[in-house]
Length: 122
Image 1 (cartoon, rainbow, N blue to C red):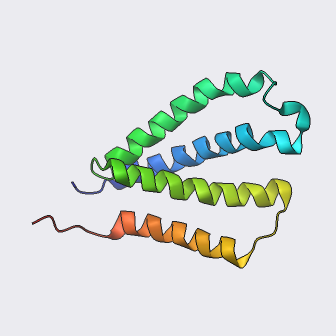
Image 2 (spheres, rainbow, N blue to C red; image 1 turned 90 degrees about the vertical axis):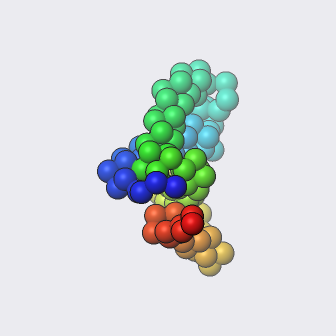
């Protein structure tokens, strides 16, 4: 794996957050407002630009992690879980349990491992 590019890591993280927030609304708005279920056309309209944002996020993350597709995937997953936890609290007020806290800590560990663990490929 090549060196990390912090510009693209930060850009990829920011774009991933935007994509994950959009996906959260696309998937969960129906539970807050039942009229926005799968029959609402807006869900399908938003899918095209949302897919584009996810593609950009993946590209920037891969560039940021020196070409590592695995790195981009782990970062996307971890950021998605963190965004999901925040959005659930903001819109539904679901209980924040110890189990969820431990899982979110593990997401931060994944981000740390991907960003700061140097591989020695000798």
